[in-house]
Image (cartoon, rainbow, N blue to C red; front, side, top):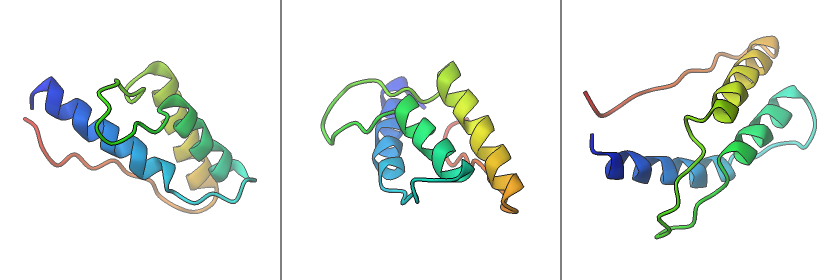
Length: 83
């Protein structure tokens, strides 16, 4: 996958993540907000790079995975394109 396409998917992911409802309290909610902070929403048409893949993002994913496991839920990452 070309970098431009990858970054486009990442920008879309920031908009999707921004719409995930959170309660405002609890470990899962706090970890989700931390991911939003690591990769803030990028508006449609903007060409800004996301924070996805950064050390802050990866740390946030680890915290979300642990918080979900503690809550009895699994997390997963699905890759659907590329090679």
